Length: 107
Length: 113
Image (cartoon, rainbow over all chains, first blue to last red; front, side):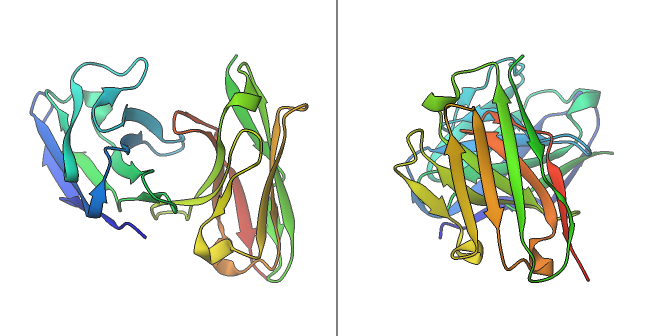
């Protein structure tokens, strides 16, 4: 099973600041990596798929990058609605697995 | 409207069974891999099971193998998850998920005596 480790666990930032979230895989994955935003009471929302492709309707301030075992989600300038938990997920090998999540909170 | 709606959740005793259903609408259901993903309240996400468009390929996470069965009826645009021998560790909100991009709201399954 591929283990995904996200860092940091928590990020405390102010609106307008840049957020950089990391996801490290226990073995090389072929860019089949997705990022989700999750808010309480809602289902997760797909932001990025295949490492760097933005899902439909996702603002340009969200970007994904990386390859091999190291991937990054960047939010260029935080909006109030961006404070949430973010998960990475791989679908390179079954079982598909998620990282433990990074909480982006208001400073 | 493109949506997935889960049903069939609830309270069940340890060792019991439950069948979850997911009704799909607004897209060509038969062309998509469908999945069940769960989240224990306050915890992270876990991919439970996956089924290919023609049911040729089916995968389960280890913790549910032999107990859970995923199936689909493309004629009825529906996905199911039969859950047997339930334990408290199966208590979670279960989401029906199309590929990666469309999630149902989720339905709570509580296993408790």
